[in-house]
Image 1 (cartoon, rainbow, N blue to C red):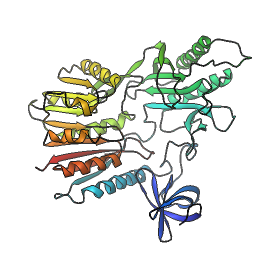
Image 2: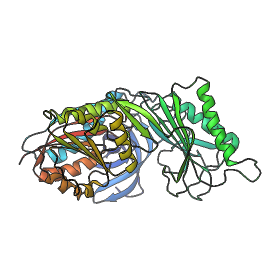
Image 3: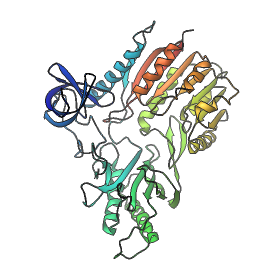
Image 4: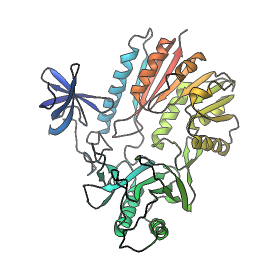
Length: 471
């Protein structure tokens, strides 16, 4: 194979994350956004040490597994990968991906681990409780759009008004906000020139309580063209009013807990706040999981699929097993808003949660108080540094790190406690297997593992592992 050449081949399988393994004669090439069984045309981007990578130019023949996508944006929007497959086929693909990754590092274990397959999401569609929509245009100098970035693109934005992974309230809010600013002829923030006003629309909705939090993210630049009349205050007030009118129309299934205006003048294309103004209600809402109630603020981390989160946390609780008569101290590292810590609190002597995001730690304290739990302690800081400052020793450790996994320097500190069991929850299987190699070399083995589909139709899933100390 040579760089720049075009080949045809059959996709044999898809490895995590979204890496189609395409057979071209005796060779293979990695091509993203392809599905098992598809015949594809591939342009070679890179050939290095006998490994080739290419880009998908065309799907010449559909996979026998495909049954058609229920969303008009599929293939154009970069959100979903497996939407044209039956859900059972998607689960089988993800289970195979995780199993291959685990086997690559666990094949040498003295005692084989138990693979428990994959647990599907209780809801396949309309499951997300958070979306960050971007303002832009679908093509250069086109009309205002609001939605998701085009697949493989950074500048073009698709208005995803028929998106199937969010419910009807998201679609109504998206369309209402887009139409309002389109009528007002307000410019979006251009990522090259760094000029413009509209940046993002953050929508969060509690799946159980129905409370909705909406945040408009803009720059502090003047939103108006020279020929236009008006003030930013009137523009923002109008934004608030069209949403309240939407709620009053009875079309929404949920209700607004808060409507916010966030100013963000950073160059990076991320949702962050330089200043937040509350236009209506409050800057938080409530969600419920497994009988517990959680207060969630604008930027608080919370699992994006509340339905599957209950499956995930029930699985983690099952892997933890019996802790005895509340005699154990549990460390919940990378604790977020304290969900796992609070689930463990009723059967533990004490639970200590460590989380680097201060806002999440504040929320965790409030949530524990809200749920009447007095044996939870939450510490704000980097796990790498905080472990040196905690006097208590854990009897059990639960790990739920960010996508990049555990900091390499934090791993020896965690292992040095020598606890009998560790439950590792991972949102990126490749980071998990990298960390598992260190645990295996340090006297632990994986007793059992299971995948949990938190993100139907996308290329991602979670994995829960139970590690047991051998010596």
